[in-house]
Length: 117
Image (cartoon, rainbow, N blue to C red; front, top):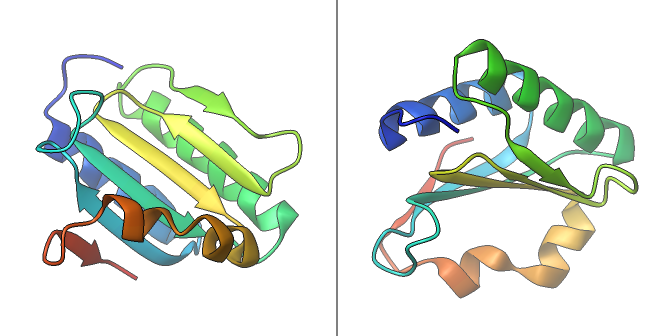
């Protein structure tokens, strides 16, 4: 990722997820919890295919926005795809996998989570 403003990168991620019809989008400000990233975004896709499509669309949108090439894990199975875009880390899950790992509860402060969709 480039030296882009983290808030601008977050806006690009959220717009892409919304355009891909990702569900239950939650953005968390994690700046006080880790130096690894400023934001974590968690979203769901309805199926393996939908999770894959969301991830592919997001990667293309990040590149098109000049935000560099993000690292990706999990595209083979598409139960949980992790996209590390530098200042923003994105997790795209199938609903039952998301429920099992419950990342929002682990990372969110009571008032820091922002439900987007």
